[in-house]
Length: 221
Length: 221
DNA sequence: CTTGATCTATACGGACCGTTTCGTTAAGTC
DNA sequence: GACTTAACGAAACGGTCCGTATAGATCAAG
Image (cartoon, rainbow over all chains, first blue to last red; front, side, top):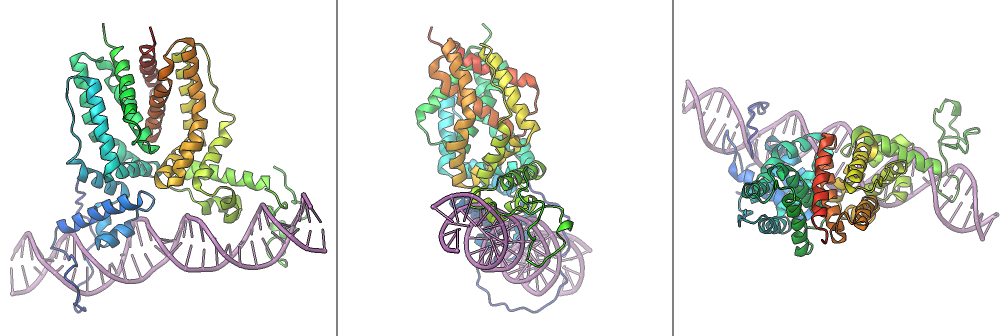
């Protein structure tokens, strides 16, 4: 996640003294003129939990702020849009995420990889974050841009490497890599967006079979 | 559009309020214990216009009611959710919509059909309605159900007939029809949701080529 | 004439938005 | 040590939208 880090903030209010100070120790005050990691963690964790519980519909900045015990301005300072927050949540889990198999057989690799990704989407928060991001992208143009220019390329490179490796081995035609990739990604989206990522594993094998066949029959003889 | 009572104007607003001649829009009163077609048309037209202008983000029931000169309860009575309204808007235009080619060649048919559909999505409101419906389906579970159980099957049958006809001709294996259909629909969605339905027509031909090849190589020899 | 469904209009309580103000805290700088 | 700078939580702003409730008017059907 990139840091906006624009030093273009309106100055703090004029200083004055005197206040009731009998608060619990739980409050996370500023740690000075820099970002408080505890605050960031609390916000991301709150966003994560809220997304897991309520999904896209029930996701609000107000509620994230409440849960995190954070101020809304703090959230808006670093994640100017919901899309940014969704991406951050996705990225936080993505680290410990998905193994990219390389067995030397495209079909086997695709089945293994797809099974992993679907489980990742199904069993953890990022699936909800991904769906939310796509939905948000249909609402606001800036979210669409973020999705297309920033999120998508990063997400695709693993899958792309599967296809390019297969092309290097001669399993499929190099010219078809991009088309096959797009076809397969589309299938992923379709399943995710219609709530069908928990279907029969045999479906994965069948669809992978189609993809591989398409690529194989396009090889230069 | 039939104006049931535009001549005598039975007192707009409270009984004493005068100057009916100054009113530019005739108030649509009830026409009795049945649905007023003029009201329905006005609401759908307002929804259509609003969707075209503002897209999913700027779409609100309040604004539709304002534009249609209708009461919110009237809208909620017939279209309990936004999803229902989106579907109605889509269906209203779909009538005069998309020809289903049948040239006897699957690739030609798919290219022609896809070109038509993409133009339909691009140049008219239903594309926005479709995107909005998908987005809404990520937010609320009921919208997802409507999308999956009601909207999708109706939209898919045209495309499905292309594949089943091709299977009947022996162009592709009958077993692959459903998989190919899902693959191709997924591609459609991916392009639509990432704002790429205006890309190079050559893309369509290339992707259709992949699909047809996958089906062809799966035929029983 | 009564019943019942449909219409517009308005108001409601509540949630959320994105921003602003306020006073506090502490790191960085001189 | 004093001053500057920026991040912090809390609260409140005006505004929009939600979905529902209420009220009075209209008209078809029984």
